[in-house]
Length: 556
Figure (tube, rainbow, N blue to C red):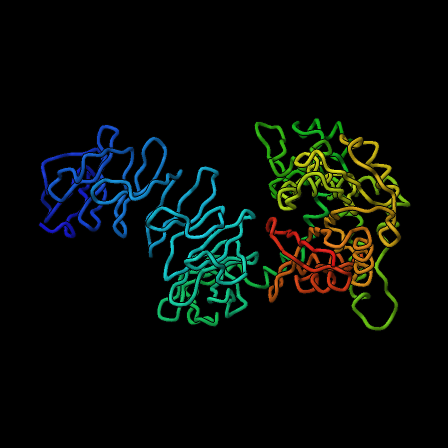
């Protein structure tokens, strides 16, 4: 009786050989046989491996057992996991929270701190770095995921195969890997680059040079390795004409949301249509049409005759700690006026200069307060991971340049309560922040001009989403002032979106900055050039999340 010919019975309680029970014993669960001819079984809360005749392969018992791969099997006992040899003995002394299976001499494991890495067959780490998640190796390459949720490839020694990161990723198959960026799925080569510009809702691995894909409009196609259509298997449910039309009416959504916020709809929920009419003094029939539009946008829903905000819609309440109501008004009322000047800004003839948005905010205190509350909400959402990435000692003198209402300062002091922290910003911002910040007594609030002498020295300067508001000459002037405030070897931490090379992601945000502040998003090379010209060396660049990175410069 050859174990390779044995299969799990339909009941899952034993194995069959030639459609006949291979042994008389019955278990609560059995799994497939694996080389060297052993199968995992469970019975009465205990687990072990059996031989082809149903007898135990060893005397040890575990909570869970799994199949043998490359001579070792993962087992669990008292919520700890490790691997055993065919005689039931531990293959090594280390213990993990979870173990996968060995492939190509490497196995994914989860450590006690919740991070993942690969181990060798002696139970030791194959490399030093830990990841948010890791997958199996295939042909010497595995997928790893970082804390920001993005994934890349590593080799057997933990070295990155390329420095391109994706929202989702697969291992390589016949020279290509399935990968997803912000625009959709594609195939990439071992350099992390795609041979084509198209993106899809899903893609299958290549099979003899062709792949079955689903288009972004729900069509099915077969494509070649250059992304060209070989065959259409199902026509798209929506044409490119319709898709373009949908993009062009995006302002419908913006204005619907802004109008609902201006009227105060979200602030009176949950309640009935009649109550909203009475409280807000609006036209009944037209209100219903607005409410239906908000429901289509998944911002509210009607439950038993009462309108309620969804989880998404709750962010549009003014009293939400991360309220986007202020952002809705900016995007709905103020920014469209600036964007209307885009053709003028692009033409060579004629005069155009970006609006002085910071001057506008200073001259309109009400709008200025709302604008900075908008920035505070984004900061509360995005900055929680910044303090750990700074890797401070905790006693440094830190300047938070352009610190706004102090949200970054707050999270810094929570992690490093002994910092000597100064927030530098425009006078009207400092006045608003210094009277309302809960840690105002732990912070030095400094009114100043980015382009003038800061009049203060520090060990560290932090700039979170500041440089992108300025064109290169002004950004360079700000960086020079930061350098003047630091000693040789002092550190500069820049939190910004970094545009990927050869990928249009972030380009719309870049245009927005052009029209609103005159600033721009930049690539890593462009930031490195600015740093060099202002007296810094770019030492490191770390991704914080899908949108932001932190660049670390050292004063020369």
